[in-house]
Image 1: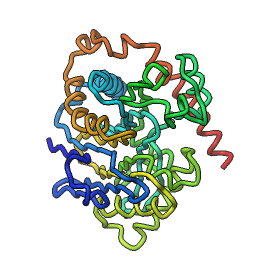
Image 2: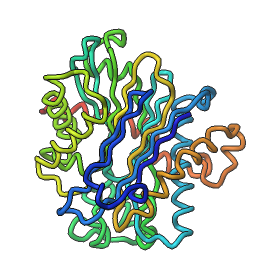
Image 3: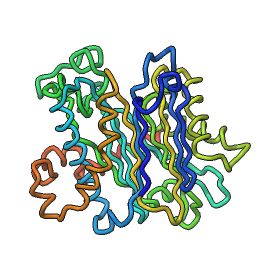
Length: 351
C-alpha cells in the first residue's frame, strides 16, 4: 500500500518553488509551488495512499461518514496541541468500485477530468459541491449564531474561510471541522458528459488548494470547472501522453499567470478500469504549516482506523455521525444534497 506525503518539513526552503513527484508504478504525480516573492513560505501539505481490501465492506455513504469522523478526530487532536494555525482540507477517496467520496472544509477543491478512449478531454466536474466562506449567507448565519461575527468578509475580521481543521482561537466562533461530503460515481460523471460509462477511457482526479482556483474568473463552481477545462485543453492539445507531474506543473503555472498570489499545490491520480482504492488529499495551511503537516501525516492512519471498525464500534464513538446527527445532516442529508443539485442545475441553465 504505497503512501506518499509532502509537507514543508520534507524539503529545503530553496526547493519550495519546484517540489514535484511522479510515481514509477502508478499514474500519480504532484507539483507544489511556494509562489515567491508573493508568498514568503509554503504552508501546503498533501497525501496519496492506496488501499487493499480496506473499503470492501463499506458503501460510499459509510465511507463518507468515516471520513467525516476522521476530520473531527484530527481536529480534536490538533486542538490539544500548541498549534494556533489552521488548514483547509480536500480529501477524495476512490473506493475501487467506481465511486468518489469527497470531504471538503473551506476552499480547497477536488475535480474529475473525464476523457474518452482516445484521450480527448470531454469535461471537468468539481467534486465538492460547495466551499465554505463567511461570504455565504448560510455560513455567515451559522457563525453569528455561535457568537462570531463576519467583518470585511472574514470571521471576526480575521479568517477568509468559515470552516477548517485547527484555528484554535476561532473554534468557538464557528470555524468548525464539520465537512461537507459529496458522493459521485463514474456513472454520474458519464451522465454529465452525455456518455455511457463504457465510453469513458480514463478519469483524472485533480485535487488542489485555492491557489489554483484563484486563477479562475470567479469563485463559483462553474468558473472553477471552466478554468480547469480550458487549462487542461491547452496543456494536452500537443501531447495527450504527459505524465501527471507535468500536467500538475503546467496547471500551477496557468494559475500563476492568471494572477494567483498564493501557494499552489496540485495532485493528480489517473483512474482506469483496474485502479485500486486510494485516498488523495491536499491541505492548505494558514498562519503556519503545523496543522496542514499534521493532517497530511496522520489522516491516512486515522481513516484506516475508522474503516476497520465494525458498524457498532464506529457508532459508539463520541465523534461518530450517529452521535452528531444534527451537525452531519445539516450539510449531508439527502434533502440538502438534492437542493444543492437543483441549484447547480439552475445555474448551469442560465450560463
